[in-house]
Length: 140
Length: 138
Image (cartoon, rainbow over all chains, first blue to last red; front, side, top):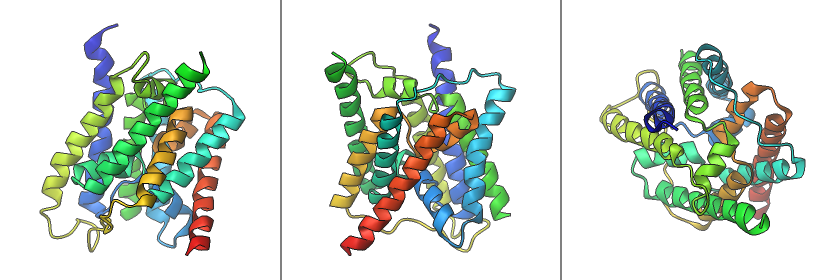
C-alpha cells in the first residue's frame, strides 16, 4: 500500500470533476447536477446539451480505462432485487430532494448553499447507516 | 456549440469518476463504511471536487453572464424543507445499498455490464414514480 499513489488518483479525479462543473457554469451557466440533467434529458424540449453531457459521462470512462490502462472495477454483484430497490430509491430520492452527490455535493457546497449542505449531510448519514446495517448488523 | 461544450464537460466528468474510483461500488461502500474497514480514499475525490468548485465558482459568479448562454440558471429554492431531507435520506439509503449514485451509475454503462443497465433503468423508473407521486399530491 503506497499512500501517496492511493490518494493521487482520487484527488486528480475529484479535481477533474470539479473542473467540469466550473466549466459548465462558466460557459453554459448551468449547475452540473447529474440526476437533474439525466431526468430532464428524457422529458424536456431543451434536451440536446443534456443528452450530450450524459453521452460524455459514458465516453469518459471508456477513454480513461483505454488510454490510462486502468483496471475495470470489480462488479458490485448481481443481486437483482437489491439493484432494483437501490436504483428506485436513488431515482425517487434524488428527484424529491432536488439533487444528488454532484448537484448538492460538488456544486451546492461550492456555491456555499445551506440547502445543499443539509441535503449532503443527510444522504451521507443515511448512506453510512445503510452500509453499517447491511455489513455489520445483517451480515453478522 | 452548447452541445459540444456539454459533451466535453460530460467527458471530463466521466474521466474524473472513472480514475477517482467512484465507479467502483466496493470502494464507495468502503468509503461509507465508517464503522468498519473505512476506506478514506474518496474523501479526496469529494475534497478535490469541492475545493475546485469553491474557488472556480467564486470567480465565475463575478461575471455578468456565462460565455455561451444568456444567463446563469441557478436554483432559486433555498428552503430546507421536508421533500429535500426525505429525498436526500432515501437517496442515501439507495446509494449505500449498492454503491452507485447517479453519475457513477451512468458512467459505469461504459463497462457493458447488465447490472449497470438494470440499475440505471430502475433509477429512471424511480424518477418517473416521483413525478407521478408529485402530480398526485398537488
